[in-house]
Length: 159
Image 1 (cartoon, rainbow, N blue to C red):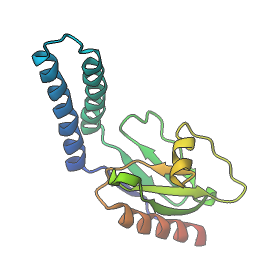
Image 2: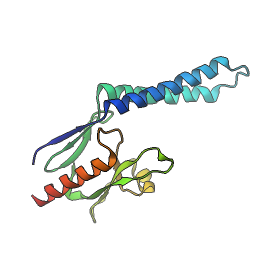
Image 3: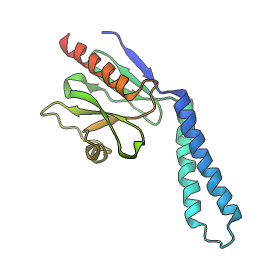
């Protein structure tokens, strides 16, 4: 089975970086024009969105990649220092997680019966209806990614 590498969308990363920088500049402007001096909350916004902007800037330098092969998949690039392989045999299926308020759909997956995986984001993804999830921002839509991942999973398990 051939290795398939899916890269994060450069355009989506640039859009998220631009939005983060917009919020940094908007909060900085509000601090500048503030007359009452109560700007602590705005400084927290500058710090938060500044860090978010740094993450997206880093993802332009080191884009996220999803590597699929006969053994499983791994997520690398971005802030991931050492990708870990998730074996296909540990996965039950992939599906689209529709989030409220249209923040953006995610790619969720559940583990096969008897497989227990712990993750930092486990409680967050469980609240969304998935045991685990992949990040957003791929060149394909979440629906297209789910079809691709499930097909790759099916072929890997068959062969």
